[in-house]
Amino acid sequence: MIPPPAPIPGPSYRIWAGVAGRWIVGSVFFFSGLSKAAAPAQEFAAVLEGYYLLPDGMIPFMSRAFPWAELLLGAYLLAGLCTRACSIALGAMLLCFEGALGIALSKGVPLDNCGCFGQSLHLKPWQAMTLDALLLALCWLAYRGGNGAWSLDRWVESAGRGPGAGGAR
Amino acid sequence: MPGSREARRLAAGVAVAVFCVLCVLAARGAHRPWIPSAPAYRQRGLPDAKAVVVVFSDFQCPACATAVETLKRLESLYGDGLRVLYKHRPWEKFHPSALSAARAAECAGRQGKFWELHDHLYQNQSEWAHGDKADEFLARYARSIGLEPEAYARCLQDPAVTAAIRADMREADERWINSTPTFFINGRRFVGGRQLRIAGTAEIERRLGR
Image (cartoon, rainbow over all chains, first blue to last red; front, side, top):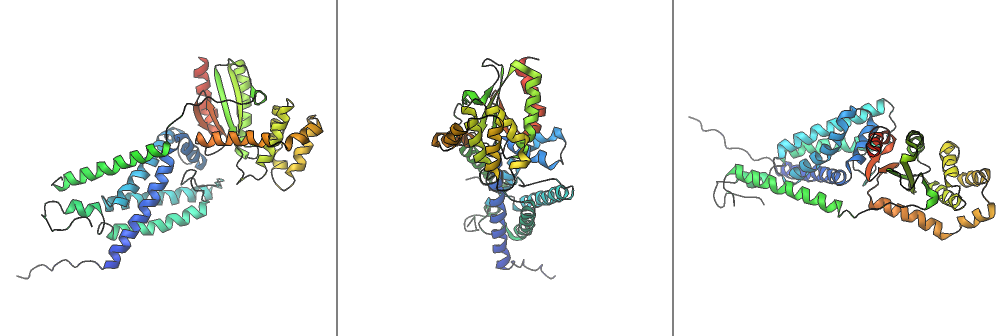
């Protein structure tokens, strides 16, 4: 009987690209979520109103929940906890942002500022779309190799292996 | 240290979430009690009105010009029940003539004509706010509402005028005002004309017991 092949570790560049992707995407979302979650919810509500995409009834809830979702997912990704799930969730968010900006631009909605970072940073819609595309690519890298080095996932997975089995570096 | 993977995952998840909450609390800072005030010439309505609307606005901002109409409709609708206080929040970075306009309005206020110039500036915003002739237009508006020219010219040079505007801007920053117009109705915040029109009207009616 032929034994199953031993798992081949991925090339180290994939792991380090994953860690870099995780840290960059995580930091951007953490910073963006923090700047909006700390500000009064009405500020972000006014930004959402400016897109004319959401029904009025949803705006108060979204203006409170969305910044916290960004903040928590960003922090989890930064720490490398549930890395793959967070990469997928943030990737989906980025696709939604691209869609929202694209629809708003195609409708001719005047957006001087995308509202992505609260008051901290003002980006024009085309700048935000470029940034989102870049972050989407980094999300893919984080999904592929972000749960390797320096991640809480590694520490979680090492439970029960005993000493020397490898923990968070 | 937790042994199982689930326990470790839960502990790490809670720790990260708690860290996020602490970051938000630190970023918000301590809320100091706020009693809004403005010089008498920047106030409209009775002192004992039940609904007090504080407006942080920028004379060069298009959204502010639109919201002025909404505010006027509310004032005509609720009459003596409403008092309005105007606070300056010119965005110099985006609106290069906003500070000059605020200075002109302050000087009009010293001659008891703040609201006349206020209305004039918003009604004619498309005329003066674009291009580099804002100061000429402001001088023309000042003449048209009958300001005494010498006192007006002296006032524009007075550092106390700019200081008063800067004090409002500092107050706006402390209140986390990220965009104009921002309204506070008895302390509750409404950002933009749309929030004022929908939720703000409901808040005023609640304050007036209607």
